[in-house]
Image 1 (cartoon, rainbow, N blue to C red):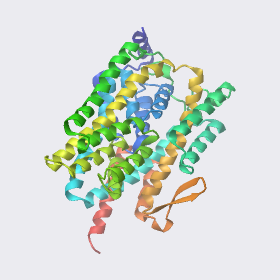
Image 2: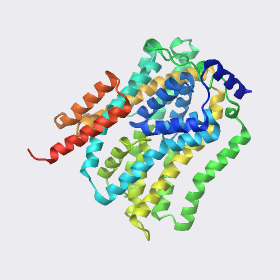
Image 3: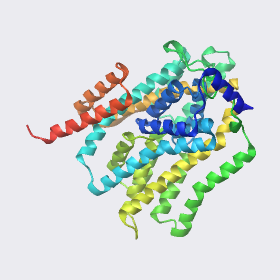
Image 4: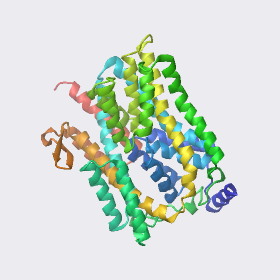
Length: 467
């Protein structure tokens, strides 16, 4: 059977499938290093799971990533669930997906409490200031890493460039960009263009890790084969875990209670928010600030700063939104208790659907992994993703280095342009140093984060003492 095939492959290549305890330690390590939004997080997973551990190959990793990019919600966390499920069955997916979220949840909960009680704390702002420079370098490193492996030849480069311009300059919705790239890839494959053929994203910068030389091998594990009965059982279980608490709150507290509104709003968000973290956060900010009045625009940016500089998905900022919403409308509860319960609730209804999408869809996605037409389409999608990640890097650089940004429109063109005399020279110098350290001297992620955080604190101390 497939499981025996995997064992034989593991023995032949000298790479064994991890036990659950081994996988637990690696997923915890990934979770603690997952700074920098989806680009940095995916780069961390690729470096550890593909290049270092060789548990999964390049093509299989990209196949899973492309599926996750098409789903609503945080693609990096969903990718962790997908790979954890492939390696260690359903419990492996649960462990990987939960650990990916847990460090960020605990960090943002602690920072939310500090924020609610003490407001703008200088040393916290200083840490964020330093970490943002490191995050920018990590995101740029991710662009380079993924781009080297996914952009092969002029056609793929053109797709990546078109995706970047489409989302950066014209505001084209992310799903449309991905759909257009998939169509181009499918047509290109039908025309026999070699650039679209999957299997070799290494290019001139080093060979990719072949699936056959990894612990998973090329076969589909027995537990990963599509099963209608299993899909119904797992789908029903996770749909109940997600929706029963929401229905219970609506029935018990009524639709106007803050907990009911939080549960309903973020459940809707889990279904309709396509387009990556920043598209999701734009939608959340508009609704949370303007419709529900849970926080102010400046507070939303503070929450985004927390999410950008703590481990885990950027979408964890929704936890901060839920916390403040209930903290300011606690009803009979203590405000801190109400905020903490709302943070748990927000996280629950945001991430339980992610497990549902993966456990329902991944077996069917694995079944079409060898399909040539699908492979051609997904190869083009991967190139488009490089352009989208580059857009995130540019967006982050502008908002890190400049204190003022203005929107400029020329017909269908819509750009965010920095106000050049608002440059933050300390942020510029620290960001440049972080980028050089990462790209030129290959400084590791943990030392980079520590050094940049320390530099932020030193700058804060220097500004505190006169003379």
